[in-house]
Image 1 (cartoon, rainbow, N blue to C red):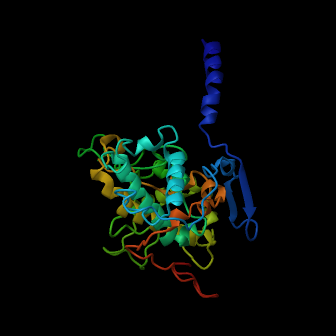
Image 2: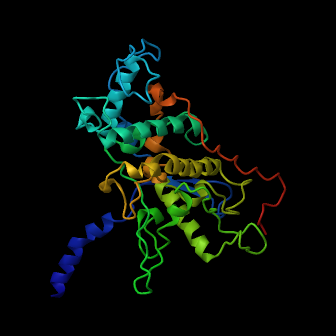
Image 3: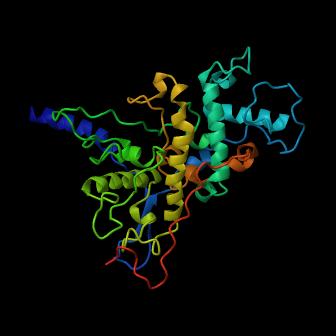
Length: 357
């Protein structure tokens, strides 16, 4: 019996090992040794080499506009030339539905029809992509995004999230959202609803903090162990999504000090607000359009988080500036509903960071 158990244990060992994160790491020492300022991130993968080339040579940005009435029910891409429109549609097909082709969103007998929900959703996603490339350059820079940044040849991006199911009302079996390892909390025992507090797109999201802004907690600014656990869950999600450690953004001397933080922290600050904007204005309103199999347990649409684009890399697609070949995704008259707040001002040299001892 002992020998059989040992054989079974050895046979199961590869399954156990493959569950661990064994990606190669790159470490960079910042500052003095022993100060906890090693920046560790996953080594660049071959994702950059996997980025698809344009379906054919990109046409010029200027060209003949479609004849009046040539296309019907063209609500978003009506500002494109005929060549640019065909090129953009061929690209989107390659990125989202390479097997189904145009029929994934269109009725081939009536291309103008909105009878397929996928067409309604695709129209909204085009608006969202343009909004990102125009309104959130403080996060995506000039690299920009395309549909492929998240979809990567699939109908639904691999990384998405929905609201967790409601806890039972009784004491029995009520875990209060904890000890339920999910990707939203980096598979830890931390609260599984942290993203709902910070990224859902509510009018007044919770602050991501572990230290109170005042000497003593107040009803308006209460940072207890409960709120701190949710913040840690959010931070664990970000580090996992980007394949980095905490000091990629923060300084181990003072995690809250902006004066000593690394530049990526400001990019991340805008990224959190961008995700809130996109979930609140573009994805959540699709609840009445999407079928049940495109929603979560609570009936809400699939939403985005940091992992949706990054997928384990500090820069999505290894930093490939894919959008430069698709100028149609940078057009439009996008007006950001809520302008992003400026990043907190840096602390003057020599001044003690707020909250520092």
